Length: 525
Image 1 (cartoon, rainbow, N blue to C red):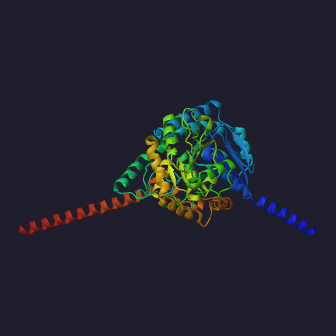
Image 2 (image 1 turned 90 degrees about the vertical axis):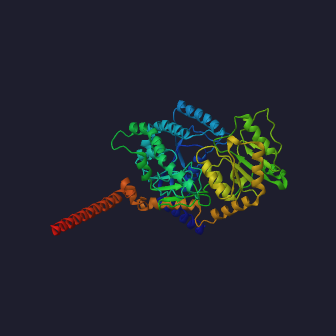
Image 3 (image 1 turned 60 degrees about the vertical axis):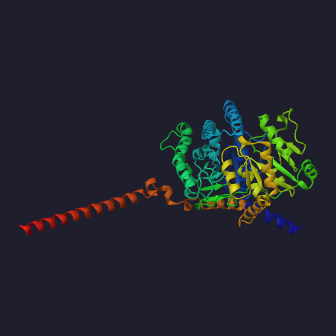
């Protein structure tokens, strides 16, 4: 008994030590779907490391129908919501937006419209004076924010908290974060280019870079009214300045799939954070997989935001293509939205929700048909499963460019999807062992990283917490004027000096020539 009592005392002392050594961290989750899943995982990891974590969570945003994402009661949650009218307007817009995506008609204007809706919602959280005052009184040491939504930066600034920015994708916003992006081998977002560009592709990349600042400014303009209303005192914060104010930039990507590029010391990549060793499947899935025999099965999901296809003709083509396959098909689809006039292919099982990571880790999986979201692709890389992508919007097209560059799979355009060609593409990726070998090779790269994603994430955040700042990881360029960063003042000085020297030389030559002419005339006289 004495030994047990001593052990209990040691455990209590150790737990108190952990509690005393922990920090208070506020996480901001203002988006649904995969964005929420990533922030939830980060919150759980930090909590398990002994920190006191609270999430400021927006309610009313779209999640996957049929599957309610709830945190595992390991950290506290404070919720807020925009008005019903604003949320309804956003959901209606998003419904129409997904229809446009399925028709292959997304544009930059769609992205700007999304930012406009996020700005409208931002007014409500900044008006939550009681909630924000309560959070201020808790004296958090650090905020960890979803950097996709600019409102997160404004809330962190309103609370007066240093913050770590988590971007749920590839380095598409690298210039905003101050990360060097040489145009000769770093393709811009939406360029659909790889890192191996010929002359014309590098020309395209350069020309696109001229228009990129205009798009950024249009995004900033969406939040101008928010900043003016909620930050009345001058100088007001500006989004470009807030992006450079982040203590760390954390990206949900990995160089197993991402193109190699230069990074700053304040940049951390944690791709694969949601990928885990596979757990046993629910019996209904295991029974279906068993019925597929040696042919195995494929997984189909078009992301957390798209649970059904409202176009019967497109749905018929996809369903018909699956019927051509010898494999079984497990398809995440909202069962209640399946049209009665379309007979589901006999080898297809539809379900409201899929244990995606666990299915990808099953030994009989042959292919993953995906929208190209980065979380899904990183899980596919982790488990070494080749993919066929149907990119719909955002970074998904660029993500699939990376997949094809790594020979891990092929991409299909949604507006050109036809049963026979789609079926042939799936058969090609399943039948050609090069795709499987490439996927397994990428899996080896990801899994053999010297430090797992959880350790990189927590280690760097704790480094900033202990030091009190991440400024020692940032270049002085963040504090230079734009003309100083590009050495325009130096080049102007050198050019002016060269022109001055050239002018003096010409004047000297003129003087010598004139002197020589005058001397000659005097001799002749």
